[in-house]
Length: 310
Image (cartoon, rainbow, N blue to C red):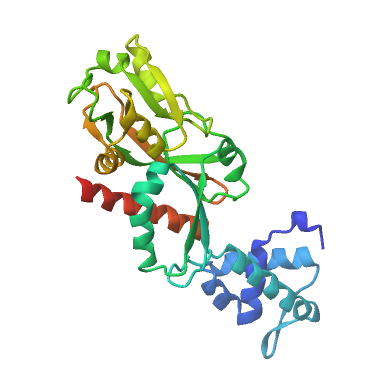
């Protein structure tokens, strides 16, 4: 026999069918081939293996010793290939004990994660989650090494590491927050006054993006003064409550602080962008059944969540 490099592996299926049927026409039918095509394939098999393999006798076609020796080897090889090429088993949320690790914003963790987890536990009772911060290493290494399964809620990124994929997930309106005692700010702000006010914002610990707000102001030839960069929303909102600074944040988060602190909502300039939240994962694992399930669960949740707040 020549090297496997020159052997047509499709002939193994022909060999399997012939050994099973011991009849050229019936074997051709099982492979959806014409009888001449199968006869030609048998000729090629004989040439490649340097053995007649099947010989016509008074009792029909009979395998040679070489064919009988090869039969279990070929069957085992084909069975391994069929198992390997079969679609992966579907993910079963009802029985899985999988722990997912999400890197998220504190907006997602505060506003969306509790109802998301509550919904999942209704039909996936043994699934659990770990919540991590979005740090510079998350996108560069965490996703690729599967230390993080998915980054949820991060604003749209223009540049991502190779192999990291991003998809739109949910948009949220941005509003401003001001202290109730802040008489410098009325119920709404135009772009000029917005730029003149003192600001509090979240620090970008991910190291991934510049502020979309600052980029929008720059397009208008404007800048703003940020007096405090905080690591989380609650600390930033407390600074707003005790100063004359304002803060720009998603509406649903702002509404929570109105109920908790002496602050009020202020309509932002119409030029302010919306928050375009995304789902980010690594292409290496995007088709794994568990990641595909998590991705769909988050998308389904977003659709229902938008309906609830609209």
